[in-house]
Length: 161
Ligand code: PNS
Image (tube, rainbow, N blue to C red; front, side, top):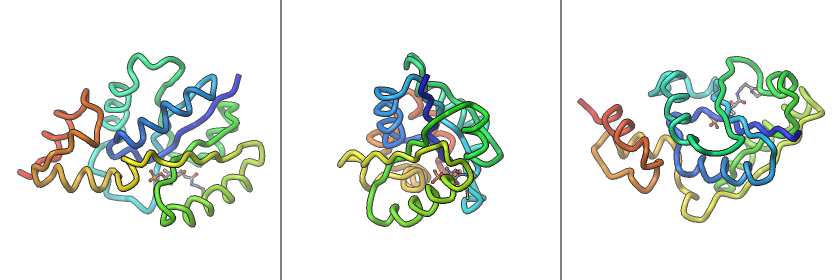
């Protein structure tokens, strides 16, 4: 049983995340989408419960994919679940240095776990949760960036009052 973890802030989940999750699900027996704490992002727009809810709606009907959250170290979570891989998407070169550092830290903390990078699809190269939030807060069109089933929820939640 090969379990992979797709960790992230998911504030909120985007089509870029969904693409990586779908691709991971083709390779692994089970994929856990893990809402985790990024100490560098301390002003999340959505609560952990809201982010989990949006992910649940997004992955509904996807076989062997589920969502969970942790407020601890990713390396410990993998050990606890017997997961063998951390799957992340790489967009541009600018992602690389930080992701490389994280993968080395996680390898040190849990030598059993491998970090695997999927290159982002061309159409998602510039897509991020921050971009989505900024466009939505000004009432712009985010329908190309987030799953259709959660579009209205994200729009109404983020529109500036
Ligand atoms: O979507 P993000 O914000 O780029 O995801 C980063 C995240 C949440 C995966 C990363 O910050 C993380 O793994 N947080 C949990 C704490 C941890 O294990 N940190 C890495 C060891 S230094």
